[in-house]
Amino acid sequence: PKGKGKGKKGKGKGKGRIMGTPDVKVWVGGLAPEVKWKDLQTHMDQAGKSTWVEVHSGKNAGTGAVVFKTAEDAANAVATLNGSQLGGQSIIVDAWVPAPKQDVVGEAPP
Image (cartoon, rainbow, N blue to C red; front, side):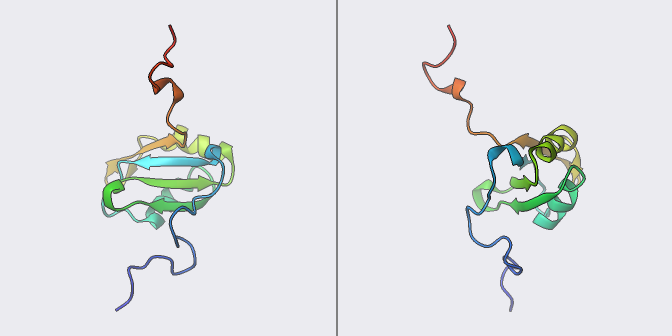
């Protein structure tokens, strides 16, 4: 029997290969369990050329990450695909940014 179908073409191999600066990446949530990275890629390519697509499993199931060629494509994906339908349910597409600093205790404005 074949493996799980991961990393056949050298893409998708290994964790932490999500390259690029945060401004070319988007976070995706609300993914249906049957959505595969290829489905997500096809969907995301409506907004711009994606260079890397990952659908997470395990405790992060239902989320994914997409890296675009340019920051404009990433911003366009957030603007146009957030709330769009994929796999029969609406998905969340959000900018890939570290946790906002204002949530740190003691950093709140007076």
